[in-house]
Length: 207
Image (cartoon, rainbow, N blue to C red; front, side, top):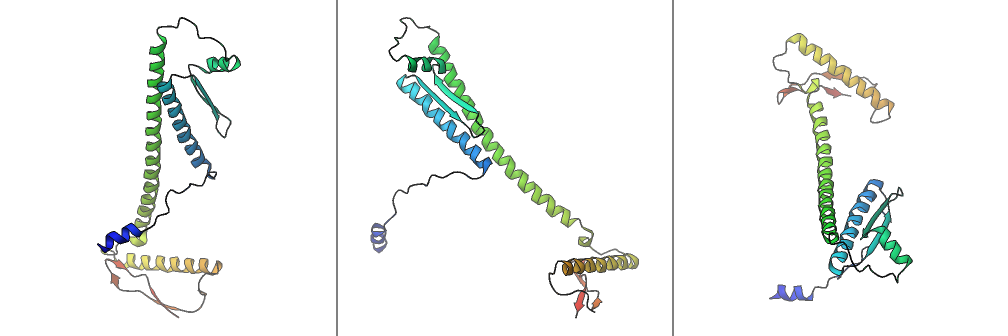
């Protein structure tokens, strides 16, 4: 009972106004333009179908590429604007409704295909990103220092140990050059560590 009263007494902000602002990223801006353009064309098509009106719509993308939607055609609508009192011809082509119906259906199919391609592109980009991350992880796993030391001869173990020392010295030189960490040029003693989880602990340093 108390929870019901609490729910009734809770106040919400209500309908929020979405701020209209420019999309800064060019790629995102073009995708947004394509989606909004498609939505406008859908509404224009519905207006023509429900009200049987003549319409014309012209929009330019950022690269100044024009996109139009018109019914029955851009020329006829432009002529109507020039001469609003122009009378409709008494006889109209009987095949015109069929042609217009085909155009509407064709436009609807193209819009659906475009939306499907946009979704497919977004999925492919996400897969490509995951694939790159996976490849980077596999490259690290194949580095020689990640290989197990079991089965190596004493000579091979000594060679690996020397390679690890060189790797350590190179890392210390780079850190000193970049002024990261402490000075690696001081005296230190190094000893080989014991085997840990199938691998070899590189070394233990003592100041």
